Image (cartoon, helix red, strand yellow):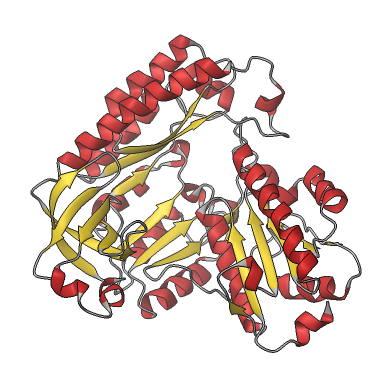
Length: 458
């Protein structure tokens, strides 16, 4: 394995599963590797070092990870000196560590969510080991300023805190990410200023519950509203985004800040999960449907035109037809602009996974279909209201399905597709010319997931 450390033109490949927090963790892992002299490449087959950064929020993520890991076995047989490391949320669970040790012995390093700061030491330790190097540390402590290689050309991911104290009965995050730990405000603000100075137009503040920022530090640096206001005043930014929020921690000061600071996105992602108070109580969510509706109303009053998006779980154990009807009714009342909808997925180690009143698959599928049909219709109606309007769009790059179409987002987080004019298509640097720039576009048509527009004065 030491040949990997001495090789010239060393390369790495990182596969990331899960949320933006995992993406940011992978950017830091890339930062470490590039400081060690490794260069990125496009596939595991080309790489000297392969890292898989995992997610455990849903069962599908587990399955995808182990599937990818199994495929690496063949590559490792052809390239025995290749280094394979696996980390992230899945590896915080002892049963998964044991599964790797027993079933995937070709893995060189197992590390956890709190091991980013010491990754170089773990990497060298594993490179010298003769068997899988298990080095999962406890989910505690705070990472200070770490190297980062940002994946997006327009967006800088900035983690402001780690962990979660809420212990929703369906969620594994507190067990894999630990308790809430807020980064010092000075560190966060320095990272934001550095990103803005580097030309990034969008900042995304990350945490399992960003609204709780500062609580663990007795608000010595202020609360999330203070941090958000300071971030919004950094010169050069088009928009400051944040996720994820918990309804129980949405303060009046935060709502006022969103209404006052125009660089803060006019969009709020506020997970609902269920519209039934009985199910919310079983989920340990600490709010009622009436309280949720009141928060939504206050947000829209404070920032007219604000888009509201959410997460909804269908088929939580014990969910009755009446419970589901209440969720549908709340969706009709709030009229979400968009929603991430999920069928309940039991996670080993959570209370809900041990309950015996799970919903049968046909009922799950029927409810899920009804919910998505309703939400897609509401999303389309929301997007159609933009037809004929001229909006500002931050271009993120070409569309994944058509390189002649630009893709971008409005400040309120709507996906906008803009066909390039013929003059731009003939230019050699059309993608470079537009990516990470703010353009004006007239919206011509709309669907449930995106709107289409044309450039104004391209």
